[in-house]
Amino acid sequence: MPRSEARVATDRPGRYAKQLAAHMGRKIEADWSDETGRGTLTFRIGTATLEAAPDALLLAVEGETENLPDLEDVVGRHLVRFGTRDELVVEWRRDNGEAGHVHRNDEPAEG
Image (cartoon, rainbow, N blue to C red; front, side, top):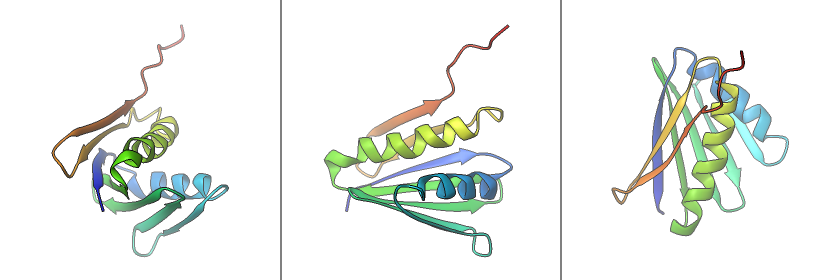
């Protein structure tokens, strides 16, 4: 199955993964384990896996080729929103070598 991956630099990967799984779990099947540092999100069109590494949150989405952009978008967009203070950046890379979506908080600062 086609796959896209992202490595999101953060010193709080478990916190963000847990928050993402809890939020998404309101609408889809989602789980997160603090013990293993891994979780999954099960969408109608594919799946996402979350893994807390020492200095990053590792993300992967799998689905049909035409669904990868939507999977990247929903996972990346929500994560960046949660990580606004830490200026998280989610840059997807597809297994066929193509660049995927890039998510970052581009909203101008108020002031």
